[in-house]
Image (cartoon, rainbow over all chains, first blue to last red; front, side, top):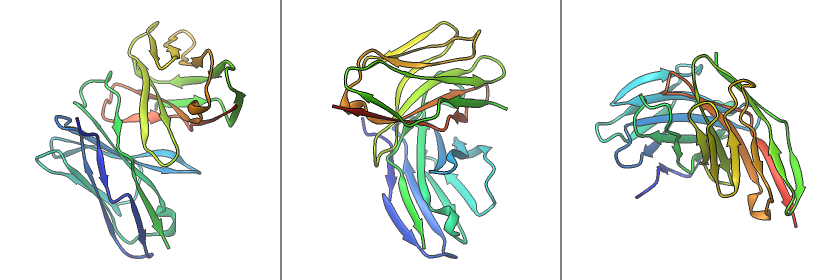
Length: 115
Length: 112
């Protein structure tokens, strides 16, 4: 069974640019969540998608957005990049958001560096 | 809101030593509790879980017991190996199952 696939693995962007990150969840998993990981803030929840609908959103500015497609693949977009957006972005999938006893399966992440 | 507090690290142990990483939580209702491990350059991996009070999760020699009375989920291993060196995260998933709350992570280094 293939794991959660995130692309690209590494990305270097300039301030002011925008970026799109992609995540393919485990086959059959309908819930996809995104987290930002930084040394100072730890793991911060960005948003969660289920059946193409955003169900939960963290406390990030509107520059951060996402979407989910009918095949459960998800993308997140960050516009007008700032230096502070440099982080590891992690995608996590789970079978169904209604089941609290399922943990996440994480991808390896996309390391974004903003210069 | 929900919160998870982990013991501060880093933790450095010799091989075959006993490991405890403390984790306490605050949540409404009856959350599920998890431990994740992150190796350098990788995403998090689910290590073990417990979904109700007094449940014990176990995997690869690691154990944690869901203690509702003390709101704790401490991670233990009887004999650590160098390969256990990683960052360990305690997490909970509450009634809003679409979101998990993570602790700050504890870095473990095991020396030969």
